[in-house]
Structures are given as C-alpha cells and as structure tokens.
Amino acid sequence: MSAQNSAGIQTLLDAEREASKIVQKAREFRTKRVREARDEAKQEIADYKAKKDDEFKKFEAEHSAGNEQAEADAAKEADKHIQTIKEAGSKGKASVVKNLLSAVFDVKPVAPAKH
Image 1: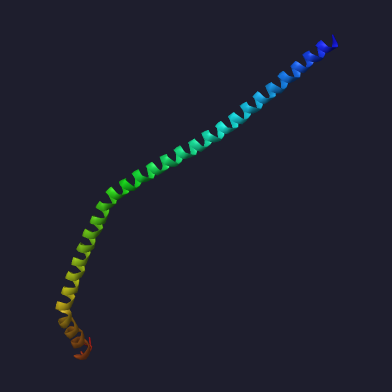
Image 2: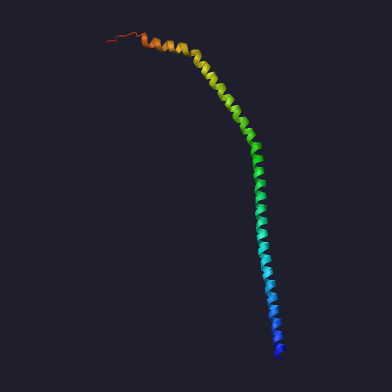
C-alpha cells in the first residue's frame, strides 16, 4: 500500500510541477503580449500624431499663403503712401524754409498803441 501511496503522491507532485510550468508559461505569454500591445499602441499614437502634424502643416501652408499676399499688398500700399508724403514734403520744402527764414530775419517791430 505504501508503494501505491508513494506512486500516487509522486503523480500528484508531477502534476503540480506540470501545472506550475503551464502557469509560468501563461504569465510569460501575458507579459510578452502586454509589452507588444503597449508597443503597438505607442506606434499607433506616433503614426496618428505624424498624420495630424502633416494635416496641420498642409492647412497652415494653404492659409498662410493668403496672409503673405495680404502682407505684401499692405507693404506696397504703405510704401506708396510714404513716397507720396515725401514728394509733398520736398515740393513745399523750399517755400516753407523761405517763410521760416523770413519770419525770423525780417522783423518789423511795432510799437504798442497807447490808450
């Protein structure tokens, strides 16, 4: 009977070892799969971010071209106005200087009137 009990106990111990190996393999597989899933998620996030960055750059390029044109037009308009002001200043410059010098040098004193 003891040989039979010993054989039964040995069979149970072998089964327990086998079960431990199966559980260990399952844990390793689960850990490996979690890592793979995490890496796949990181890659998907990176791909999505790159896609959205490209879309943003495309959108920005399409819409900033109009702004650049508007800025160029405004700069041309401002330069035109500045040139007009400079021309007006240089046309009247001689007469303004003459009038100023005349006012300073051609003094005509007037005596105060007595009441």
